[in-house]
Image (tube, rainbow, N blue to C red; front, side):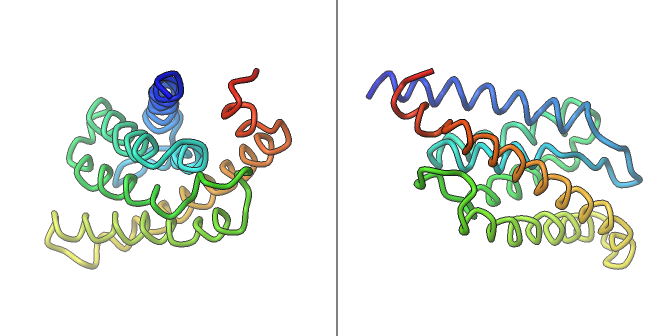
Length: 169
């Protein structure tokens, strides 16, 4: 049991670093911030790790990316949105690409799009100007969903979850 917790903590740390890199450094700048595929790794972690570890990955990865790239104003929204998105997915199945996780891409995307729109509207006091950021959020959600599906299919083909839980290679 102790070994398993240590394995999950290590994986959470690795995924947090991956989310940070793919969010902070591999992105396309926009007028409101940037568009990235880091969410795809958050979704992947949500399907691989138990809930508390996956929530940490989403919140900490997004927090680090925003705070260390000059977009700290977005950090409160990112922490809440990314942590909440994790709850849409399940890690309790033997495979990653299952109907629930595919369907979860829709509310997770809606949460990202709507959450960032609402946050920007609240901090600027303008509910019209943030509409221009929606195409970027949609692009981010679509690309992250595609990345998640590709990673999930590869993980399922390699039986990653089965090997991870058995302690094998």
